[in-house]
Structures are given as C-alpha cells and as structure tokens.
Image 1 (spheres, helix red, strand yellow):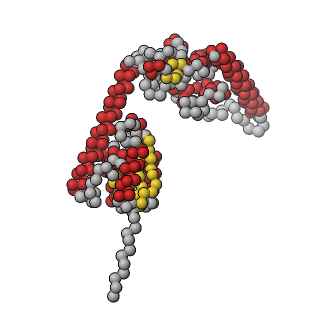
Image 2 (image 1 turned 90 degrees about the vertical axis):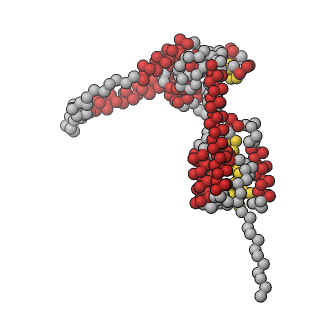
Image 3 (image 1 turned 120 degrees about the vertical axis):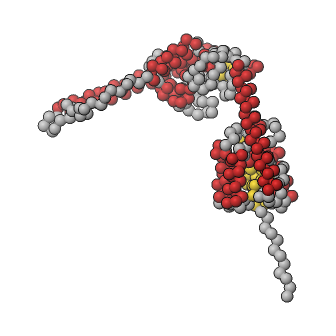
Length: 343
C-alpha cells in the first residue's frame, strides 16, 4: 500500500512591530532599517509577513503606545502566529512589561515573539535562551533610564543658560542661536490677553472665546479652551523667565525677549489668587429653603413677583453678555489694526 504524500506545512503568519522613540532618532533604529531586517528574516525563515504595527513615542510604558495595544488586541483574536521585532528594546524597555506581555503571547496565546537581530534558539523556554533574553531586557531598561537621565540633565543645563526648553509658548518662534523671539502676529494677542484679564472683567472662558472669535488657534491647530488660556496666563516665560506650563516661578531670567512687563504678569497672578480664594462656609441654616417665598394658591402675588424678578435678572445677564461681545469685537479691531501697523 503506497504512502500518502506529506502535505507541506502551512507557513506561519507573522507581523512586524516597528518602534522609534523621538529621543532615539538617528541612533540606528530607523523604521526603514527595522522593516528591512524583519522582512529579510521572514523570507529566510519562510514566514508569511503580514500587517505592520508602528509606534512613534517617547514614553516607556506599553499602555502609552497605541500601535502596541492594537497588536495585543489582534493577538487576542489569533490573527497571527509570530511577532517579529528588530531588537528586544523595540518590544519593551521595561523588564516587568516585557515579561508580562511575552508570557501572555507565548504561554496563553501560543504566539512567539522573535528579535530578528538577537537569535535565542527555537525554544524560548530553554534556560539558556531565558537567561540571554532576560539579560537583553535588563540592558534595554538600563539604557532607557540612562537616556532619560541625561536628557533631563541636558534640559536643566539648557534652562540654566537661559534658554526655553520643550515646546515654545504660544506667541514665540525659534530665532537665531535657539533663542525664542516674539511672533509678530501672535505676540500682540498675548499682550492683550494679559491686559484684558488684569481689568478684572474677563475670565479664562471669555478670553478663550475672544481668541477664537479672532480666528486664532493653538500650536496644534485647535480652538482655544479654558485650560490653554489658564496655562498661558500662568506662564512666566511671557515675562522673560525660563519656565514651563502653569509655572509662575521666576527663578532663571531667560535670554528671550519678554512679550509683557513683569509688573503686568504679577498683577494677573495676584488677581488669580484673589479669585481662587473661597470663603469658609458657615453652618447650614435650620430654616426651610423656600420659607417666606412660596405660598399657597390663595396668596399668589409674592410668587409672581419672584418670577418677574427672575425674568428681569435673566434679561439683564443677556444684556451684559451682548455688551461683552461688543467689547470683544472692538478689541479684535484694535488688535488687527496694531498688527497691520507692525507690518
């Protein structure tokens, strides 16, 4: 009796996980380089390479990486058999997360995780392979912690020299020698923002509406909100100091040109502190809330008077809002005129 010919084994389904952190750009982990090494490995080992999961991020934690989270979700649905990464550090730079997610994929889902530049052997559970991979993961985390440490040291030194660090505040652009300079179009709005708040007639919400009415947008191209305006009004960088968001400290004098005077900045901070104060609440009154105000049907005239009073108050508030909008429109005209004059 002749033997049946053996059926060729179906090629395993592989996916690529590509990751590059912003601080690692130019350090040998380019996405194209990772893709080429992964594709070459898949061809040499007869793997069917399918989807690619990509992350560009700075944080080390896996839950901050949308591409990685999507990979785990697809793994739960058994959409592939192997995950290929260029290096163990691309999968995770935290030893706890590396072990947890690899255990989930390998032990619970039957999906292997392979670093194409660090061969560990066919059996990841082999003691020697386990030790080798663990050593790689420890060095990956050490590199991450070390890189973060020296990056922060560099930023602190840069701040000590009087240079703004991180994203520039709205209203500034990068000038010569990395020194921030006021934006000719946006700086007048920043100054007017502080001046309007200092009058005591505006809030973060009304100022956000004023900026949006004037067709201004944040550095990300979005409409201004309360939080963005609050961060601007609390940023001492506008007064010429080196500080970050919501940082009112004035420790290091910056090399950049201030947009507002220090006295104006201090006046706005004092007003914000006054508005933040809350009166100590007294003991609750034993009197019924509507006592003396609500009456039965036979005595309706007092209740009707209260209704009329509420309606009048509503009309007065609406009138104040219309007057405020008119003032905002007038301020917009003044700002536009000032910008045209600067040009």
